Image 1: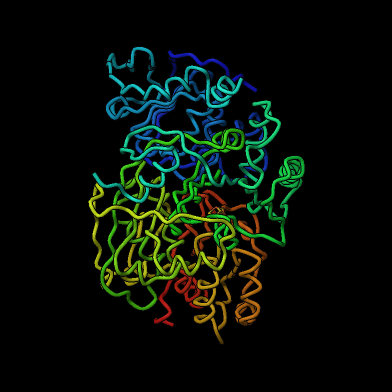
Image 2 (image 1 turned 90 degrees about the vertical axis):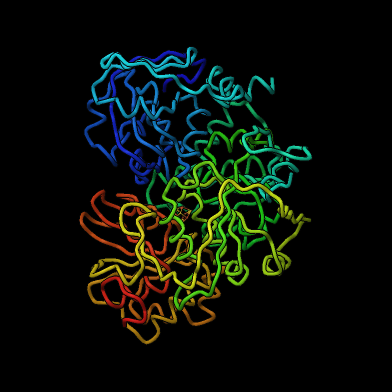
Length: 171
Length: 419
Ligand code: SF4
């Protein structure tokens, strides 16, 4: 299992682009939820949407999608599977709220940007810099500003998620 | 400036006089819930926190309902993990198979969740309890784990969208139709990050069961919570169950809403949500000819006794179409018992239905009624994403119990009036 310790703030990778309202049943269908083993879950990442994704994904890749990414159930198995299969960051127009919380809580970097999503295509090389608050599409040679996260969430992301954060507070 | 009921409850739980939308708060949690799918991940996180004890063993609720009775060995292992945690932590609210049911029907029924509470649940339909005048929302396993240790959870104060329902309900129209209609109107992200407040004369006149159905589906519009101002109907329901004190919060008259929607319900027909989104709704008169292989009546959305009564009223002295499987799953053991007492279960069985023990089972394509490739179901559940009930290329249509029952008889989607 990958470590969810201190997380990086810069991610570069190849894009896998998807549409709007990608739901948690597509990210990890319920039939695979009879385990909480993330390595097992990651084998089925996005299986409900794109059965071939898991064979094409490589470490560092970035998922780009339309609005309301991660809608549906509260299953944290969804962001866990995405993180474990090697995805470094998810960029979407908007995220469904439980997915948003879960991603931040487990230390999966997520970014909202309408324009970056609009312009991006599968295969493009993209660079996300959370510190600078920018997304660079290296293939398209375009630059986008991202809204900074509220400081509390930045803190959560810096320490690598809610568990690390609570640990620090209770120590 | 005035506050909405959601803002008032959250302010009271973070020790502030007032809060503003957008503010981030640490809220006290009155009840924290998880199930057999989400608790195992949370228990792993709990162990990572090296925590010895939960913050309060009376405020945590664990319900094995999704893959239970254990559908396979892996699920059995998950449930075992849950059970060991319950014994180790002396969790009071644990409801074993045969003595519980589907979490979101069970918690209100047992009086575990009350008006004015802040409830979090590692299940997206935790928003159901807003029907009691609580702030209640779905979170993930890590949030639940952190809350088990700290008794707290972080929230961004949501802006509220108000929905006012006016007029008189047509025949066969229920809370399910109102919420499907609303989601059809605003879309599956129409209330993203927002509180959805349901109000108006129609809401005052509908049952607690209908109100719970509506709040249950707030998440299908992206909502953070659904909420209804408590009234006499709420208090009557609560008084029969509450075992601890509770507080009724009243939204202010001058509260600020992000948007206000007004619906004339006299014009709303029973709704059917077509695949693959709950927002893909059509009135029953515009459904056309949709043949079905399966009809499913139950779930945390529409598995209450009121729902079973309506289904039985339609199915009485009728037979399920020979090409259709009808599966009825009462949401809790108490509902099941009541349905036996009222003769409803007899009606279902005589009509040719399969009646299942309370479980989430078919609702999430877990077990007890999974669909094959190309099969089509009508269901009183809340979600119809592709593959939700089985094969990726199977289809789910959402409706109220009357339409689902009538469709089971006709073999295609119809209103009881067309039988
Ligand atoms: S009945 Fe369906 S929607 Fe309700 S808790 Fe179970 S799986 Fe979730």
